[in-house]
Length: 188
Image (cartoon, rainbow, N blue to C red; front, side, top):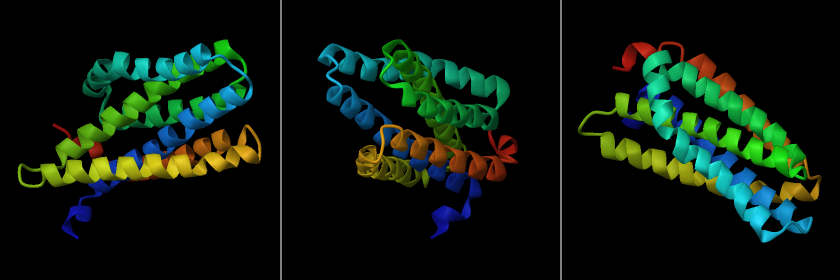
């Protein structure tokens, strides 16, 4: 299929799929653990909100960072931040740590979203932009669905889903680092 001939598009689609898995895994697992521990609905709802609040707050900033430092550096930074945030979720039972980690992880997610969207737009033409954005949305959704399917791993141990999430981000980091080598020359 011609859509996969562009390496940049493939890199962005892999990045957002892995990012989707992470988002589909972290939020539900954290909520489940908080509810199991008897945390108030205020704590549960606030911890979720704080992660998405950082996405809203840093979206504009991510674009400026990409303009200044390049999409590769910001996308890699986002993956690293998200990976470390996933590991930090192991301390979900310490609310100040959880709120801080959720906020920081949201920043990493923002960098992943904005970075992959910049790549999608840079390798799309007027004729295939809709199709490429559609693929992006479908693979993000599939990633989120896969992430929610991994929730059962909390039965093995509270920390297991977070290590799985970090491992997936490490795999994405390696993939993106290898295949993003010449991406800056294609971004206008």
